[in-house]
Amino acid sequence: MRKLILTIVTALLFFETFSQQTNPAHALTKQDCLIKIKKQKTAAWGVLGIGTAMLVAGTAIAAHEYGDAWNEGEGEGLEAAGVVAAIGITAMVGSIPLFIAAGKNKRKAMSVSLKNEQFQSLKNSSLVYRPMPAVSLKINL
Image (tube, rainbow, N blue to C red; front, side):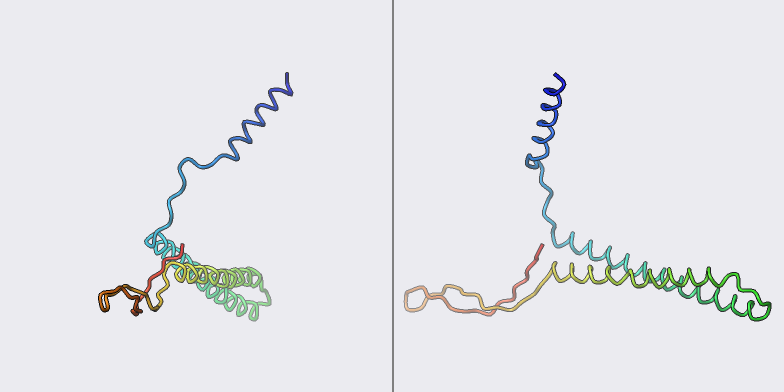
């Protein structure tokens, strides 16, 4: 009896797992992509700013502690200043992938190209295809 119940529960779990979505997610529009790009750039600039502030603060603390260590022979805060500066550098380097992702999404969201489109026109009472220059705006999602 236990095996039968376990088999039925497992089968129901698998049927639920492999079924199709009843309400699929909507496709991203150009506006959604632009909002995503703006959020990525804001996050990248924020991380870069915080990293720069931490680097400057760590350097200032280290300079102050180094002066105290030179005068008094103690340098207790130099390690902490080095850690703060290292975290700042890491944050600054960490902002680079966010800028790259925002740029990729921007190129993906909008690409403009020039190409010749064929259109029908009348010539001597017959339809002919003629090329016409056109600007194409692709939204690759």
